[in-house]
Amino acid sequence: MWPFKRMPKAPRSAPVFLTNTLSGKKEVFVPLKPGVVTLYSCGPTVYSTQHIGNMRGAVFADLVARLLLQNKYHVRRVINITDVGHLTGDNEGDADQGEDRMEKGARLEGLSAHDLAERYTKEYLEDIRKLNVTIDDILFPRATQYIAEQIEMVKVLEKKGHTYRIHDGVYFDTSTFPKYGELGGIPLEYLKNGSAADVHDRIALSGHARIKENKEKRNPADFALWKSSPLGSRRQQEWSSPWGRGFPGWHIECSAMSKALLGETIDIHTGGIEHIPVHHNNEIAQSESASEKQFVRYWMHQAHLTMGSEKISKSIGNTVYVSDIIERGYHPLALRYFFLQASYHSSLSFSWEALAASNEALNRLWRIARELKSETKGVSAESDASDEIRRILRDDLATPKALALLWETVRDDELSPKVRLGVLLAADEVLGLSLSEPPSFSRVSQSIPADVQTLVDEREAARSARDFARADELRIHIENRGYTVEDSPTGVVIVKK
Image (tube, rainbow, N blue to C red; front, side, top):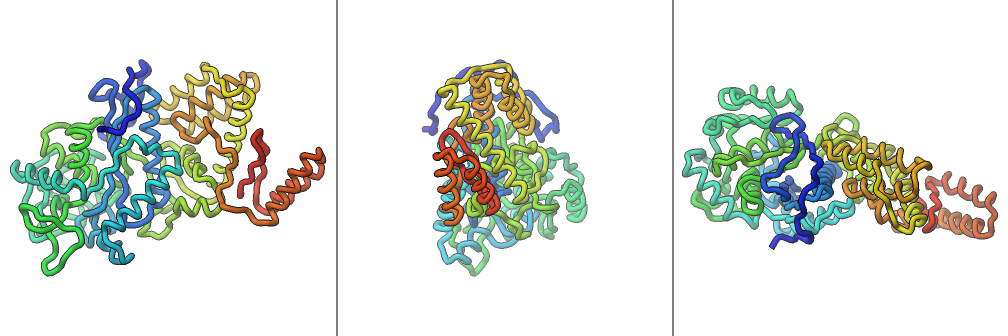
């Protein structure tokens, strides 16, 4: 049984607009089945800790789901866990090259591949939960749990004449799928007839991956469906198949799991833009060749998170993790707030200064939310401003505009506290910043320095004694030590700058 807590309701009459990568246009969203949405998202390869670039993808998919839920759709969600088959090529174009990342990670950490996957799957789920990604109603299938389904799909493709075998496995013949490369607008002539260099040049124009030449492949873009285990070696993860001992290619897992859990045609598929030229075009080719039906109706992609001018990437070594953010004393939701300040279409450059500003802004929103809840006793009112927030979000998740209107509204003293609270609550249904239940104390680090704590205690004593001059003096001392002070109805909030 699907882990749903809510029965579907009729959708709102107001339309939801989403940018569909397949058409390159913003379209009115209409699900295949009225009132119900199937949503598949590319998840992590669990060979190591996921960095904040990966977190942007998780938050983006969560925003899509929250938007649909706000508009009364019943959302069936799947996020795959890749625990086999993703090889160590430098980028997506090299996805059929190198050693399996799970095998390599297990060897380096002295663990079984299964234990490695369990460790980093648990860590990933904990990290996205800290970012308010609602995970209770999501299925997280492991690729290793769907080996039979993957083998069956390869058998169907083989029977229909879409495959061939070379020394290292079974490959999909992209010349049998005339639409190959349609997602992202990569012309088939580059992929079918061009050299590897042609393909590399074409894809590099849009900042994506390259495809290395394999002399045995019929076409440069052909990709592995099933990889043969190397002769004379034994992998931790390998299975018997009609093509001998081996393991699935990376791309086939998404097609097999989405079909098994959501059906042959799904409404929305999300992922990063780096997935477009290779992984997602491969998913389309193998899924539609097997089913002879449209695979995905709306493709949605978020842009890269960068640091300076470079994409955040393990291979580059410029990674930042959720644990780093917490260790520096910032609330993890400050990262979510930071993501929301840019459209999901736009690349976003991370810096610690930008995160500090997001942390401060979020704490101010929490303080306002606490004050409004206290003043109204938690009773909110609907208004045109609430409707406008919802309209902005329905327009392709325009989170920067939504944040701007949110700030404008909560600062407007001409609006009643109940109306301002209503706007906060309407925004938070999608933004997911805990504005409806703001933390009573937002400092995340386990402890603050003893000298700072002493100053905080002295300031609280001064305020209790109504010695406000002394309290202000102590505030300056606290801020000089790198902490901001926020006074709220529920107590003082100390946040590292």
